[in-house]
Image (cartoon, rainbow, N blue to C red; front, side, top):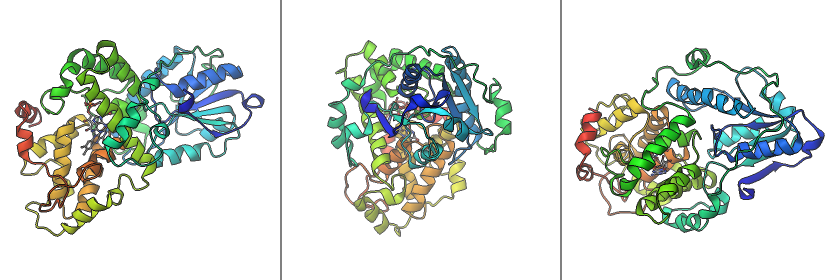
Length: 445
Ligand SMILES: Cc1cc2nc3c(=O)[nH]c(=O)nc-3n(C[C@H](O)[C@H](O)[C@H](O)COP(=O)(O)OP(=O)(O)OC[C@H]3O[C@@H](n4cnc5c(N)ncnc54)[C@H](O)[C@@H]3O)c2cc1C
């Protein structure tokens, strides 16, 4: 636990404040939440109640109905599960979080990794006189423990993560809060109707909510159980087949911290050994690639932009920027899935309807944007826009890792070709090799 904890501001918590606060940003959950348990433990030591504060700002980019409904569905359930432990969840927009933070004896933060998210937290605690502590709970191996520099490839970070993996799979004991905070009088959104609250918010209502994913840690757990019981045994073999239903579908829940990656792995290890080939494959995606994305978010200041690609990839794509494109589509045509390519349209429709795309289709979907836009920079921007606007799992380090990978980052140069230069191409042939691709196409026809 100590290696997850970063003291951002020292001070004596004993001499001030009526309560301790946990300013929740990244980990929307009541179990397996290191920041929460750290805060409960500290509040108990200080003999103070603990408030969990959730500032509901219209978070950019893409504050929209789809993403906010998913988030608030989770909040309603989280309020109940925290209340069962005597902890008050304070959700709100119009009241003074700065005052609450100013009145706290201790402020605990969880740990998002994107720069705009970190900036928000930094500004939120700027005026705090109390000690401020950040706890890294949404990775298995804390970013700084895994590596002190930007890692160029999965193969370079993999051994660093695997060498540390087991000691970071520790249990997170749920502690009892000795001084309950349910009666602390602070205004908050305490209703159960998500719809009423959504109507009050200044959000983009043109991106409709989805039925396929319902927000909340209970939903995340349900999906995890199904995955471990029914799918994990053929994960290695079928995870790349878009029609095979072989993956966990947990990315929206991991994105909002409604489930912890440690918990996902621990559940898998209850049924399978660490060296089982399916578990090894899961670790590679859930830990190695996912944490490579966090490494890039922390150490590459241009991550998530075309300018953040490695030099060779940027250069080769720019050298081929004026190659003739057979099709160039407008953002609107792409958004509406109106291209000549039934595979691409199916992937875009999956995104529109469910808020996520299968990983293999996502690679194809993004690679095509290099070919179908005027230049690679525009292709990159469209990919980020579409993925973040419609994806429930968008605006995540994984989003920019996946897109950057399609544009050559974290990959090696290949034989030079039209439009792509030395960046790896992907063709329809590779999709047709998957036995259940037709099933996928029917589903999203
Ligand atoms: C162009 C592009 C855009 C992407 N955008 C996103 C995004 O916005 N949000 C997102 O979470 N993932 C993104 N990915 C990665 C990957 O597609 C999704 O994580 C995966 O499809 C989620 O499905 P799942 O939960 O069923 O995955 P599973 O196979 O069940 O994997 C479990 C978890 O491991 C992590 N994971 C799996 N594959 C990857 C990967 N390749 N890179 C990093 N982490 C991975 C995810 O958190 C995932 O939920 C993107 C990939 C590409 C190529």
